[in-house]
Image 1 (cartoon, rainbow, N blue to C red):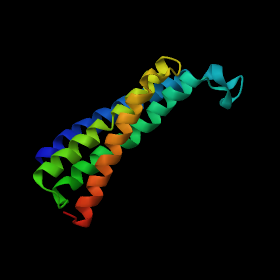
Image 2 (tube, rainbow, N blue to C red; image 1 turned 45 degrees about the vertical axis):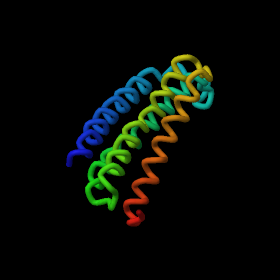
Image 3 (cartoon, rainbow, N blue to C red; image 1 turned 90 degrees about the horizontal axis):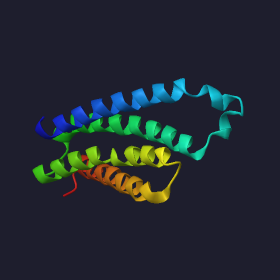
Length: 133
C-alpha cells in the first residue's frame, strides 16, 4: 500500500478540514436566513462550494487508496493516479480562496487546475479498471 498511503492521509485531512469548514459555515449562517436562503453573497456561496467539493474529493482519495493496487496500471501509472487524486484538492482550495476574496476571478485558474487533476485521476482509474494499456 505504498502509493495509496498518501491518499489515505490526504483523504482524512480533507475530510477533517471540509467538516470543520462546514461547522464554521453552519454556525455563521443565521444572519442569512433573515433575507432568505438564496440571498447568499457570492463569496459565501463559493466558501460553501469549497466545503461541498472538498468532502467528495476526500472520499475519492480514500477510494483510490483501496483500489490502487488492484488496478492494472504500471507503477508509474499508479503513482500518477495517486498524485493526481491528491492534487484534486486544489479545486476546493481555489474555491475557498475565491470565496475569501468575494468571488475574485484571480483564483479561477486554480479551481480549473484542480478540476483537471481530479478528472485526469478518474481517467487513470477507469483505464486501470478496464485493463487498458
